[in-house]
Amino acid sequence: MKYFIICIVLASFGSIIYGFSLEESALSHKYIGFGTLGLFLLAMPLFLIKESKGKKLNDYMLNEENIRKMQGKKPGNAENQDTPKK
Image (spheres, one colour):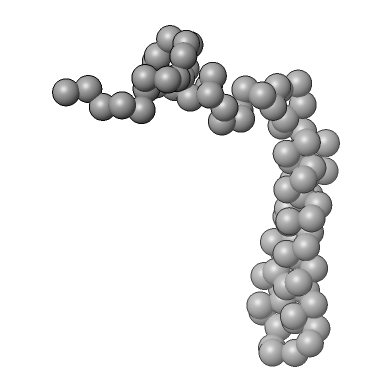
């Protein structure tokens, strides 16, 4: 899977570079467009699926519990959190 994704990325970059090397024509725009589509519609989703396998999505979501963990506070009531202390 890793090598397949690398091949798609290299082919996409190659297509984009080849499209820029051609003179201004409709064909050059097609090469650039297909290279961009290859990167963002094939390579990126495949990479994200490969890398996120086995990970919990809840660990990366911004919820009240994770905010408290980041701030180093103990979990508890949020009633008195908004009032500034004098």
